[in-house]
Length: 60
Image 1: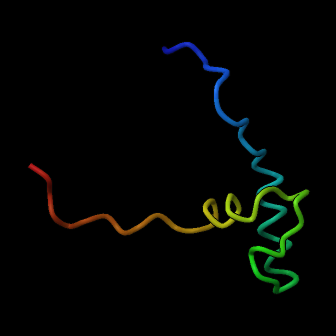
Image 2: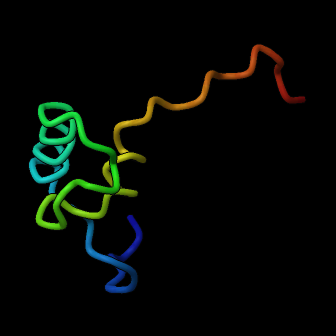
């Protein structure tokens, strides 16, 4: 196991992210209008978006 690093930003709590996404859809506002207490709107949007579809082509 690799040692933990203290570099970079501290991750946002999952509950905070979920509350921010819930707030966005309950109020019907744009992502940029989500309050800062829920985290960065860009973080919320990234965590909400589904992953891109996997390619059916295999890499060799």
